[in-house]
Length: 521
Image 1 (spheres, rainbow, N blue to C red):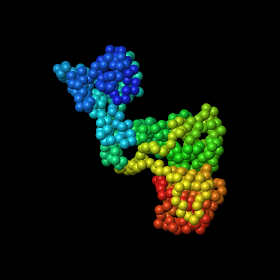
Image 2 (cartoon, rainbow, N blue to C red):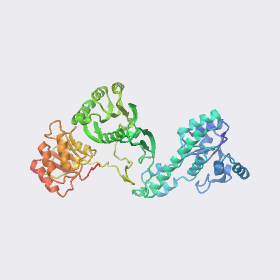
Image 3 (tube, rainbow, N blue to C red):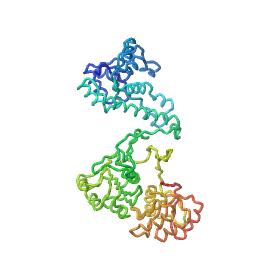
Image 4 (cartoon, rainbow, N blue to C red):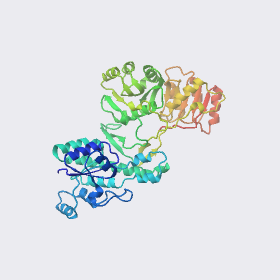
């Protein structure tokens, strides 16, 4: 059906002048409202104000503009229904064949610090959702464009055929219901708890599918990967969902889980760092200045576990580092980027996946909102803040007779950044620039202590230890002391703290309490 009349009413006016000029050039009548109409007129595009078209000027400070039978009748009438067409004619209503409409910026409004409830409510769109839902319902007869990215393709289709194909109209209609679901969910989340810093009464979340995965954790499980449609904080946080794959087979479910774990651990460091993850927990972490050496130090923590693992590097990969990585098999590497020679070296390995994340460079956690952490359980959903708590270990409470040296504080700070990313019960042995042994995912803390020490390939004498939670007994301190550690960082808070501190004092070990626990189940 030929496009003869369009209605354009937008908050986000990106690209609309060019789109409207193209429509006007095809002799399509354009209806518009308020600021959009002014913008188009100033650009030399002929428009008819909606108020002039309906005979009802906008009222109530602009709250009522498009809610009128001449608008919604023109959108909802089914063109193959003779009774509908007769009623349009009787009522003096003309069909509206195309809408370019988007919504008040509610999500951006509530993201502003200190926004008032009144201001937020004024940015809840009424006319926009009503129009686009009506058009999407009647998609066989009306094309509805809500995304500026679709303007060019729609215009070219009209220029070729005078109409918009049914396939395109259905695709555009589906986008409408995705948009309105997200929009209404954001309003509900905000009004039922979000504005008070509480969790909403009904938690609304929307993700946009990035890809179908070959399978889930196991081959008999179906799976897909979704990206958050409207992350809290504006969606600028670097993440696996925004990374670009440069080489290799498509990512698997387990690849994505491990990439996320590696990336989150690597974000802890401002200096050059390397993280190697296996089964969603670090098996080697290091920091320094020369990337190749940093990677080698991370790998040397546990080369057996590192084989086939996932690497995160918070730097641009150079050729020397690429050659070092190429000596063994790894599933994935995610980095700020890859120099051309490095990419050539690694791309020669067919089974490695290379992920580039440029937005990562220069990103810092401080003063950033972060989307919540979600975990599905059967019949329910657990929602919590992400564990972004930062502690300055050098300012932590010293509970032993001996205070850590400056060198020990450096190592303790490093170990504390790592231990929060290791599965509980978690123990990390470290020097100031690398992990030496990691014991994670154990059902007792003393077992984690023993396993971490047994993993050590370099001397433990003079190393430090970090624990993600308190020590319930002194046994872990006694075990670690035998391995040669000289300082410990832990949250504290056990009823046996005095006994644990006494064990440290007996061994000449310095110990600090952070008061912050980092369970990772």
